[in-house]
Length: 277
Figure 1 (cartoon, rainbow, N blue to C red):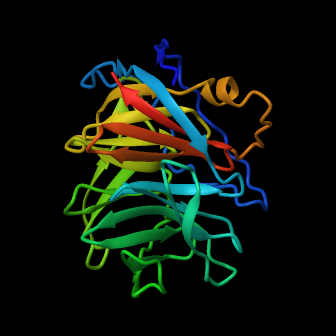
Figure 2: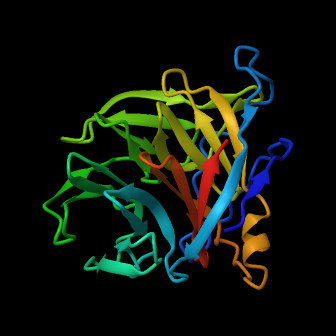
């Protein structure tokens, strides 16, 4: 097993201009990066890491949510007619269970697990599905969510939700009522297009759509305290893979016991197992 230590400088973060198309491309851009720096926010630290292993990933999976739970990887996928939740054995990369019994207009988004229940957001459908684990049977209920659904995670008490802007919401798992919200910003201003989320040891880790960057966010004030750069890793480990425009990093899962991070992306051929420095 090869260990690769990775350290990058932090490049300037460009504003992304989003173009709508009929392939499930997201078009939300309410929050733009501010022109002036916020002197109250410190420059984020560089997060070092090592890729310690890789395993096969279902290349048909348009990954929208990723979760490690009781020794298994849970993955929520999107696109109308292709939405699913699947469970993968992280020792083999094989799918051991799958649920895909949705109406054809459902576009699945982020997932999280709290109190033995799996929550799955939807993109424009304005609802969230709730499943009772351990089996992926029919959802036991749906909840209304009036914003766009992008990514979600939990701190064990609340469901933490992104909607493609610089805002992150903290919602009651009983009814998804918003209890509070934060605006994410680094030393250059607001950081928008926040997507997949994972709560790790008191911080929210969020990837920014169409980048291979993961932001470590203080949930109390929204300040970005660290950035992990994953640029170049997919090409390094899968050099023959030709990703499409939407085949972007969008899966963050955390094994709290082993302190290992699992990373993947939409239609990627690999899942990366990563140790943070």
